[in-house]
Image 1 (cartoon, rainbow, N blue to C red):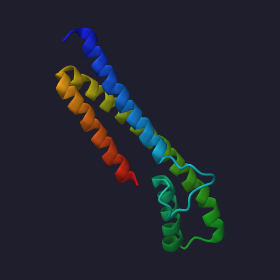
Image 2 (cartoon, one colour):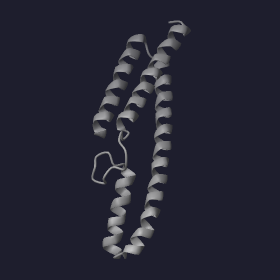
Image 3 (cartoon, rainbow, N blue to C red):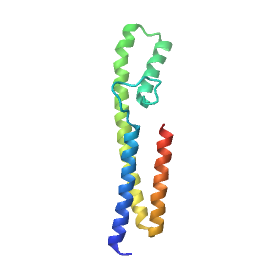
Image 4 (cartoon, rainbow, N blue to C red):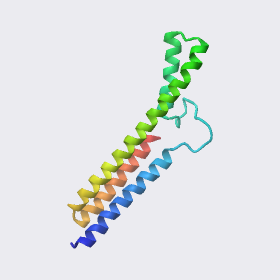
Length: 132
């Protein structure tokens, strides 16, 4: 196989994988106005953590209403930082996976590349159904 065909096949794998990531992120993003309730399936991990932590603090530490209102923004701020960190990590993980798949693709035959594309799509579908 010549280098041009090899490059086109590798680029196709990357494009398909990248498109899957974008669609997965879009499907996962909340598409409404305002924050989701803490028991909502679209509430972020960080929102649920913040709410649960505040509830535990109120119960275990017997916070006064003033303390609760002072602590609530601190938990929100921390949960926002955690969400940013999780987003950065997700970006880095996706980049590492794209790089790995591109490098693996270089070692495969045309038939194996087709199967790799199928495998990547299956894994994406599994992740998407696992997120719901």
